[in-house]
Image: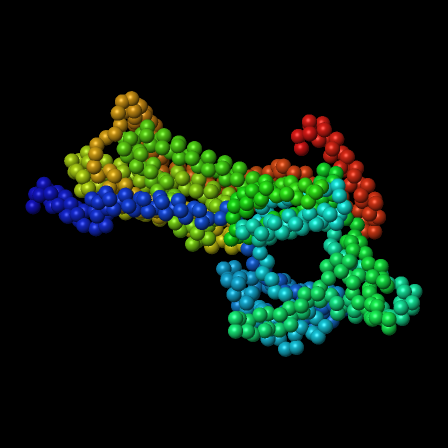
Length: 613
C-alpha cells in the first residue's frame, strides 16, 4: 500500500468516527446546544436567588455543651453527682473527640469537641440519649441537663435605642422594637445588650408582720401560689380538643399588690400591698450605657447559616423607615455589617467584571471576532452552570466564594480557546460545517480534558483540609471544580455548534489590529522565546539546576522569616474601642469617672477632625 492510500484510510477512519457520538449530535444540532446554554444560564440565574449572602463563611466550632444547674451544691458534689457520670456516658460515643468537664458551685458543665467530618446533629442526639439513660440522673436537687450544639452566628447590624426619659420607659421602647423586629419573617434572633434585668422586690418589715399577725412564710407562700402559670388539662368536645391553662403569673408591682394574704373577720381582704413595700424596678447593678451622651439600649440582630444577611438588613431598614417608637425614644442603626458586606461584594463583582472585560479584550485582539465572542461566552455559561450546584453543595455568597470565582475567571477560557482554534484550523484545511467542528473537538479532547482534570486535582486537596482553615477554604475547590467541569461541557457541546457554520466576523480596522498583534507575538516567539528554549535545552542540566536553586531560595525565604506567614493580614478597622480595667473592688464611681475622661477626650479629637467621626 502506498503512503497516499494509507493517509486516505486514516482520514476516512477519523471522518467515520466523527460522524457518531454525543459531540457530533450537538455540533449538528444548534437547537439542542442553545437549549443547553439557556438551561445553564437561566437555571444558574434562578439558583443565585436561593443562595444566602454572608460576610464570611460560617464556621462550625464542632462543640456541644452540656450544662446541669445544681443549686446549693459544692464543686465536689457537682463533680461526684454530675460531671463525672455524664463524662463517662458520652466519652465512648462515635464522633466525640474530647470531653472537658467543669465542676463549680451550683453548676456542672461538659464541653465536647467533635471529630472532623461527622454529623453534629446525630452526635448531639446520641449525647442526649446517653445522658437520658444514666440511672438516677440528674441528682434530686439538680435541674434537667441542657444539651446545646454551639452555632456560629453572623452579626447583621446593631440598633441603638436611646432616650432622655426614665430607664423603664427606655426599656419598654426597646422591647417594643424588639417585638416588631422578631415579627419580621426574616429575623429570628435579637439580643438585648446594655440594660439591667427587671426585678420586683417585696420588702416586709417586722412591725408589719406583728401588726397583722402573719409570718414571712405566709407572705412567700401567698406570692408563690398567686404568681404561676399552670396547665389545667385537656377538655375533649365534639368540635375538638381544648387545652386549659391558668395564666396568673404577675409581671408588674401593681399586680403583686393585689395578692390576697388572708380574709379578715369583718370580710375585708388583707392584700400584699397593705403589708409590704413593693419596688418595681431593675436589678441593683451598677451599669451605664450611653449613646452620644444619652441613655441607650443596644439591639444586636444576628443571622444563622441558613439566613440571608442582606435580606434581613433590607427588611429591618424598611421597618425602621415606617416604625413609630414611643414618645422620646429614638432608634438608629449602628455598626451595619450588611453594608460592609454589600460594599465588599460589589467590589469583588466589579473586579470580576473588569477581569472578564480584560479577558474579552485580549481575545478580540488576538482571535477572530466570532471565535472571541463565543469563547468569552464560555465564562458566563460556565459560571451560571456551576451556580446550579452551589446550593446543594453548601456554597453561599461570601467574600471567599466570590474570590474563588475571580481566581477561576482566567482559567475557564483556556479549554474553549484550544477547542475553538482547532475547529478554525479544521475549517482552514477544507472541512465544513458540523464535520469540521467534530474533528476540531476530537483532535484536542484528550489533552484538553487532561489539562482541566490536572487543574481540578491541584485544588482537590483543599476539600480535605480540617479545622477552621478548612471550613474557610472549603468553597474554593468546590467552585473551581464545578466551574471547570461546566467549561468542559461548554467547550465540547455548545461551542462547536456555534463555530460549525459561518466565516470570519472580523472586519477592518479590527483585522488590522489583529494582524499587528499577531505579527508582534510571532516576532517575540521567533526572536526571543524560541532561542531561549533552544538555549535551555542545550544546557539542560544547568537549567534544571537553576530551577532547583530558585525553589530552594523560595523555601528559605519562608524558613528564615524573610517572608512572613499570616493567617489573615492586619487591616485597619473603622472603629476604635477603649477598654479600661481596674483592680477588683474599685468603686463604680472611679470607673465611671475614668470613662467620662475618655469620652471627653474622644469628643475633643472628633472636634479636631471636623466632627467626621
